[in-house]
Image 1 (cartoon, helix red, strand yellow):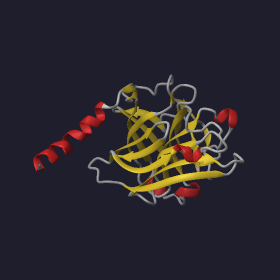
Image 2 (tube, rainbow, N blue to C red):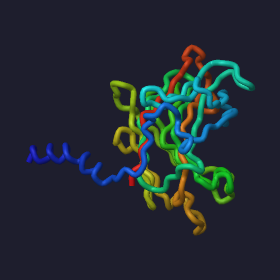
Image 3 (cartoon, rainbow, N blue to C red):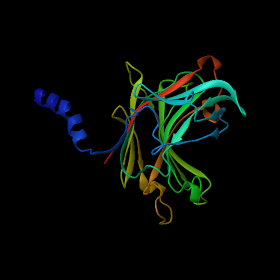
Image 4 (cartoon, rainbow, N blue to C red):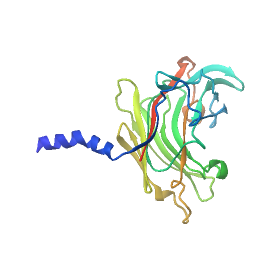
Length: 252
């Protein structure tokens, strides 16, 4: 019986992977960021953040098969710091399935890397009506924790409702972790290295029979913010601070 239990434990991850079909992947193996997939945001951040987003190779590039988002302490326009933010709006949309990103987070107080999603209708209907899925957020002042969250509007489409959880980060030899959500018509489940740490029931976002905001396509955003309402005071000794992304994979 013990041998059978051990065998089931060993094969269960393989069985799970066979249930997934890879339909798209961004491996960052090229020399340049693929502009058929990614848009570059330029300008100041939100939430009282201190960085100015650029598309400069100093802030955003591919190195050795990795996407590198680098935050720097340098005066640029209205800011004392620069960084980068990319998104797939109008180019790559996601609805249901597993969205998986392997990444290594920056270190130091004031860093705020995030992997997240907004509804494709944001430009038409605004925020928070479009909905938000935060696959992973991290703030440097809490280095051993990651956060996953859902944000959606109250009836007035102005006030926010949220469902969020925090997870301790397991040990990693190289600093890389795999962050994922598994999303279907009924739920959105959050994982770090295959460990489930948060579940959201989609019907909780339904109001008065209107179409559910998590039953439509979303686009992906990856960025490295600095300071602001959550990350707080910035330690200037940490720069340059680098956020590495190994891949983005989308399974059905």
